[in-house]
Image (cartoon, rainbow, N blue to C red):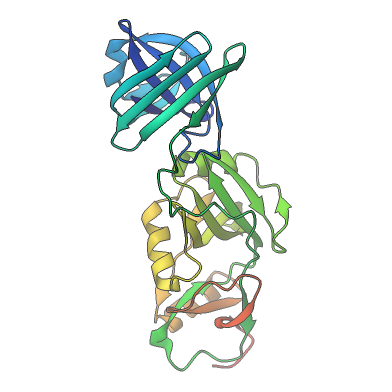
Length: 298
């Protein structure tokens, strides 16, 4: 069985029943789905068999404090078991296939997938995606029903690349930058084992710097760049990523006037209009996205 453990840092606990106990490894970035990616697996103490059914909150002050859920469970076959190497075939609902665990130093092991990729069509998470930018326009689009309208927050562009419960960031030029303290771990915890690339900006909202998410470029091994804006936003909303100092920015199909009035009341500089059928065009200033400042006419 595999437990997702939201302790001080998110990790996954792989536990194999053997000789009346659960032999355990903590895997910080999750079980690899591709043989090209080996991951650290730290050998921990054996656990009693009763622990295989445990889900819940470990109280603060206790070892491993934090929320724990059962991420996968099933059966396994042993191909080899020694003090330095374990080879097994896992039969879970999420993880299946041949895996090797091999000791490197002390309690540090590595876990390696011996079979071909679990999803042969999965695309690797991109190293960097340059942001798509809006054109400045003086008027609202005539076909307002074909657009969604958003607030122009006026913040600093920040894309997040989340994988294995961790996140890294790129800025407005597509180059690596640091994110606000704790943001990466919080996004990693929110997404768990799901890899994703998120587009957004850091802006001040009600006196506090907040990461506002407004696009989803990659999810679960699939690029979404060619998907229409409407589909990307629906998928982003479905992730439920709102939390402390992060928020999924709202979008309003066809509601230009209401959004403009609300943005003006909040003291924002303008609004954005984004075509509902538009793909994401990296590094492009596209007419499919329009920035509409308040100083212009209707």
